[in-house]
Image 1 (tube, rainbow, N blue to C red):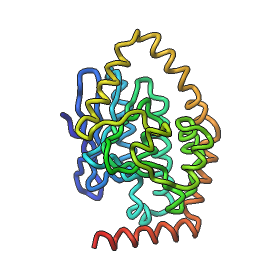
Image 2: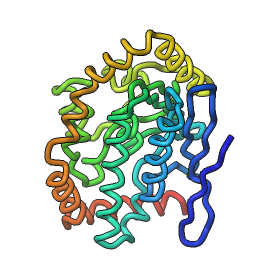
Image 3: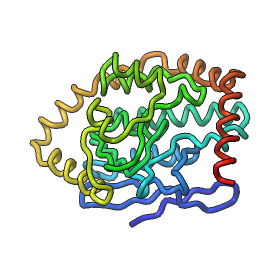
Length: 266
């Protein structure tokens, strides 16, 4: 097992762990308490996903900690950032999503618990999604916290669940159970929590056992729509997304959310 250390505010934080399962590399989010995403973590995750392919691993598993895959963007921290830092964060997020979507090797999301908002976003562009059974929630609740759902993310949702269902889930910002997520196609498989990573590994083994040339070429063709999704007007989209972040109604809703979160923890 390797530790990938990141420096933030002069502190050494181990935000990611890697576990190698033969020719499959597992990259585990490890930022307690909820694996919330920062710009540094997004950049590190992208670097490690891309490095896995360069180091001749044939598949990647993206996992979280027991009970928590990722709570999404670290909103309390983000509200303290200035405009350049917010711009860097959104660009880091889009860069990570593009690396997942266009990865030359399959990526499986081992969803080890709650995965609202950005947690779901990370899983959208993977090849396969295994989620823990139980009292967990998944979904794109951005609208509920005042953030318009970006087109690229909506496009990823539409690809999985269809346009009408994506409209319902995206507009309402609903968080749904693992069983509901399986029913609408947001996840592909359910598993007991302690078996999630194992199930993800088994999917990798089945996929990698296929004739490699045929699998790789067919996968590339099947995922060509994702390449087109990230090739069309991303810079213009990012400008709109960042402007929406700074819109007064969005900031007001986000700050109200942070106030509620602080009351829960006190």
